[in-house]
Image (cartoon, rainbow, N blue to C red; front, side):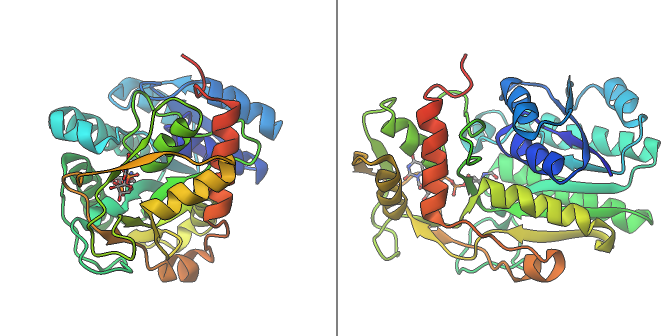
Length: 336
Ligand code: WQD
């Protein structure tokens, strides 16, 4: 099977390219490199020992998309998109243009080329304010920030497309909180600027890039008062995409599936596990809540098990050990 991966040099995109190559798929990737480094692609080639064609290309370049899709692909896995919640609040139009209009351009190019198998990188953010966990795919959706609004808009675009036209097979994979890195320590998360997400900030603190982790709130109605999330190892997440690809023709139209572990860990539990992995106490300070954060959210992973025959296999200890190995070997990520 010949697969096109958008956002291929990113954190989840590069890990997925590696797992696809190891599984024998032919892979072509592109990325606009606005928030990732092409070094990840070089390392995926080294780790897999397989060819991986990569192009610098932007979702807003319609001609470029049409040219590439016309080469003929059996399926597209679509990761490319802006994903910083805070930035989306400041620049909603940039997020709409890039994430929504960009995806519309990709789908138009797929239609033109006769490719109707799409796996889309959606997010648990589409569930908006979650009152009770575990969350299954029937939970109402709402946009609590412009980033989440773009994921919702793309999902609705896919549902409408699949209703209007026969022959589409679309998997909307709703990720929970991706963390960890490939066990080789050669590819991993390399956020630009100061990370908003917990794990990269914790690990950057462990290598001395920050004085202490800021714990956003310790007065939530959770066992230790800090926020609870469903962390999923990025390798398990990549394998979830492989499972969806192998079952993509079972997706009649567009269907959403949660990719999560089905259990939550608190901020303090993550810091403790990361400290153990790093062999040092990672300092933290309790700070006021971050606006927009919910207390607790974790997935009901039953549908993924049933439809994809997939479940996570890596626990928090392995997530932290693998993330630490990457961070320690690459204290400044892929470098400037
Ligand atoms: C996790 C927990 C924070 C940073 C976001 C996106 C979601 C998905 C995953 C893309 C919360 C606490 C965090 C810090 C902290 N991304 N925290 N100190 O907000 O659950 O989800 O990333 O799809 O769409 O919304 O992830 O890592 O930011 O926060 O205490 O420096 O860690 O309050 O409880 P979040 P996160």
